[in-house]
Length: 69
Image (cartoon, rainbow, N blue to C red):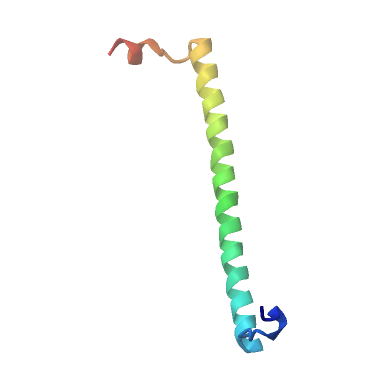
């Protein structure tokens, strides 16, 4: 069985490695920004859900109309 150390391993030039790292970091930043937007949207939806439940419980909105149809 050949020794693993003897296998050739292609390595791109340093400039290409740096380009790859820049691209990965750029994509990571975009993904992180999207995650933050989704979390903000979830928080806002939770607030709206709470407000809707509160309005229904206190009688500020009539929820019976939707159930009748």
